[in-house]
Image (tube, rainbow, N blue to C red; front, side):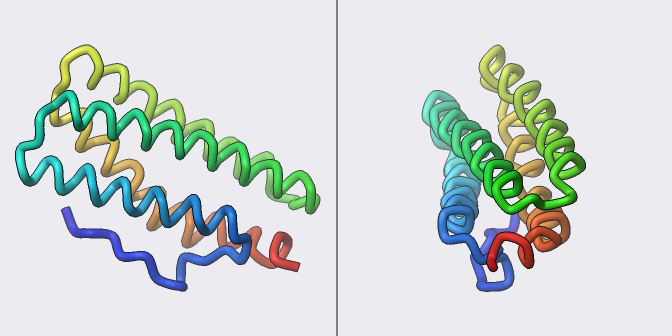
Amino acid sequence: MTVKIWTSDYEVGVESLDADHIMIFSLINHIDDAHQSDCDKQAIGKMLKVLMQRALAHFKREEAFMRKYNYPGLQHHAEEHREIIKDLQKLYVAYQDTSNVIASRAIVRILCSWLEEHIMKSDMQYKPYLSK
């Protein structure tokens, strides 16, 4: 997988949300490095757990900002979050059950897609509302 590099293009204008995105970039890259170096599955499982926790906390924080600033696309955006969470949880459970590297790589792919698609398209739509 290609390493994801944080650039200012990903900034949404809210420091805490941008910090969340940076942390998730870093964790994804760290997990990918672990795959590349054949790190033990238990360590990868712990990293995936932290990544899941960070993503869930980020979604809650982001939706709270949207509510605070009366973002009109909140419902649709929250639905996107629920779909991402559902997919991640299913894959995380599969990884816990089997410690299957395929499941952990699928989690990383979903989060990379989220970073590239969700942030650059969906999150950028709320940027004018939250960065006032």
